[in-house]
Length: 252
Length: 58
Image 1: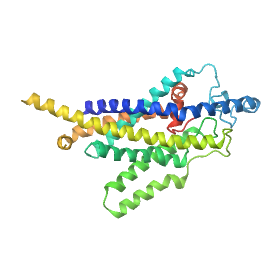
Image 2: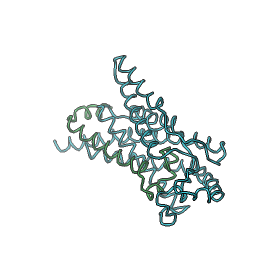
Image 3: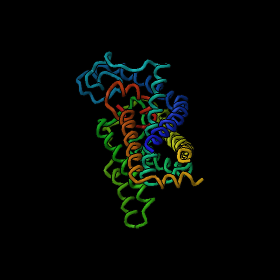
Image 4: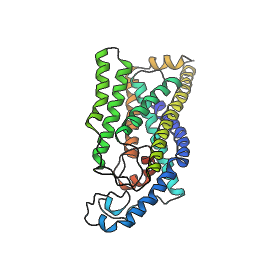
């Protein structure tokens, strides 16, 4: 069963990841590239300010001021064009494999029957927990936007995603009213605490582009979860039938 | 239609636990690497995807 889990995660993630990478290439990536031109202009306009001290608060995403070591040239990054697209595709596929594995792991742990409809329902919950709800606190943003320190944001994101996933599970699976009420309360806690936010906005990217990006990002995330869920829900039963047939043949 | 149901319920509890654990482990390691690792090379390779999927970036 472990082998089947790993195989299905890989296959489903590969399929969904490639589809979403193509979608991403024509939706969000062009906006990221456009935002980087504003970011570059901003960096060119304020070099003395940013280099005034090592801890300048304008965090230019790829500039020397934002890097701990400040070695702009020593740092590897993919070249714009084919190489950058290839790495983005690779990372999106890896993310899809990761989400497929989490989805399968959750469904197996919950002793859920894995078919296309149930896998899709779990994927919707996956999107809520790992996409929409964290985005309510930390909106999808373009390069060049002001942001609070990275680590507290990552901690808030992970905690919110886990609490939401657990809360949804308890709410949808448990009968006791008080437990379900507790689940709703728990899901609200991260938002009552609040996500870490910067003191003041700094981005020079026009609001229209940023708003469009945020909407596209949420749509791509939804598409990624649904495609992953569908792929898992279609491939898992096939592999299971095949495993069953092999076992029967071995017995006969 | 019901073969998957009977098979998944007939699989032993320890077998299911192992499979679930392996899947959750693989998923967590992958998502941590692509979305959260602080290494600057990983960040730069994953940059566009981190923004698109709204993982906290920079």
